[in-house]
Amino acid sequence: MNACKVGNPTYFIGIMEVAIKKNYDTKLDTKRRVTIRNAQTEFYHVTEYEDGTVKLEPRVLVSPDMLKQIDAAVKRHKTGHRGTKLDWSKMPEV
Image: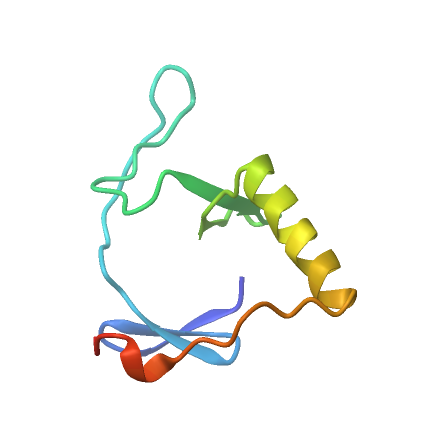
């Protein structure tokens, strides 16, 4: 991985500068697993590089039912059904 230290506590990875949130050492348990302390998400995509570097990227999984709903909505949209317009002025401000 081509990460070079730019400043403390940021790293330049490719074209994006990322602030370090946590930095700690860990070890594999007896089942060869690593624990992520106070993880913000349950699922991660893992990329393992030849030099031993491991990159974890958070993932949000979508249920098969949600995918079916998305497919049905796309089909309806392609056939010309656009639904009713939303009046944003009636929505509460966030």
